[in-house]
Image 1: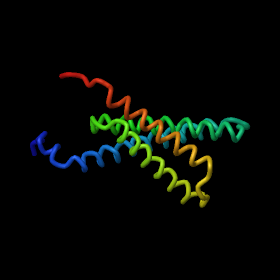
Image 2: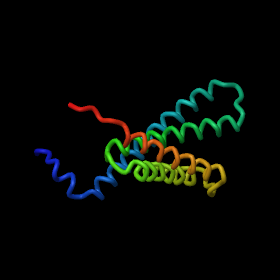
Image 3: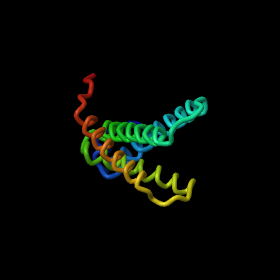
Image 4: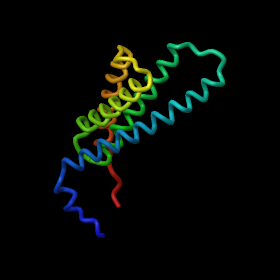
Amino acid sequence: MKYDKSSRAENPMMDALKAIVLGACFGAVFCMIGLIACALVFMGAKSIPYQMIQQIVLVICGLGALLSGYLCVRISRKNGLLFGFLAALLLFLLMLLVSVAAIQEPLTQQSLLRGLLMVIAGAIGGVIGVNKKSKRR
């Protein structure tokens, strides 16, 4: 089957949705790998302050959202701020759903802070991704 570039423009809503979901998936994989690596490091440490763990989780989630927004916009090649924001929001909602299901804890101030950080980082990643020049072949 031959790829036709004109078929890509026929359904822009599906292209946008695909980019947002793929960006959020890449961000989720990054967060998962980062959190597993930190868990392995923490297992070797004797004592770690709880506040330090929270800060590290915030940084990893922020980086994952930044990557999510960046990759989403690199796929879609347009609407950097909006698509980066939506990809990070989807990533946050996915992480919130998993954490509520695993811990049975309602929405907390810490999770709202994490969500705010993630959507801002995702929007910034989207702006960076849309402004990055692509290579000419």
